[in-house]
Amino acid sequence: MTAGPQKRLLVEDALETVKYRVYPETPLAEVVDLMVRRAVRAVPVVGPGYEVLGIITTGDALSQLLRGEVSEEAEGEVRGGPLTARDVMTRAVLCVSESQELAEAARMMVNRKVEQLPVVRDGELIGLITRDRILSALHAAWLPTNDETKDDS
Image 1 (cartoon, one colour):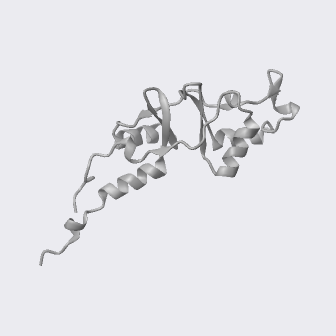
Image 2 (cartoon, one colour):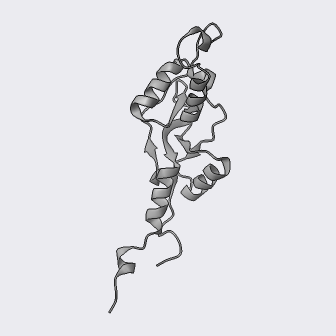
Image 3 (cartoon, helix red, strand yellow):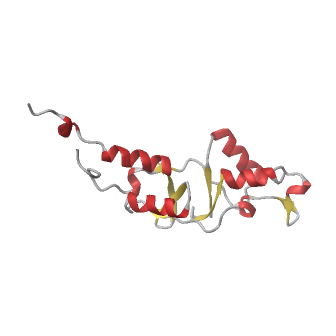
């Protein structure tokens, strides 16, 4: 058995295409509904050219829910209207390129204590990578190939 991965893995090897994204004006109640109905852990917030402006995680949504600020009731209003994705999103979002090494992206996630990272191509959101997907890809790469497990007797 070898001591390392069989091939150099890139972010594209663990990429999950984005199924859902929201715009800054999307009401927070809609974002939370999407997250719950579709079991989504994070929703990227994008601009008109699909550039990443922020991200809303289940942690962000839960914090608002515990404050009672997810519903469109008066207590959840700011600037005279209901809370929107813009009001809640994390703005300082670290993004990675699909051509970056997967191990490098994994180290960034561990060091910054984030569960997922947006993947961009030419400034446009194309997907997400998650710790789960990275772990699976790295695990598969570390497994010996069938040739290495055969007994040559």
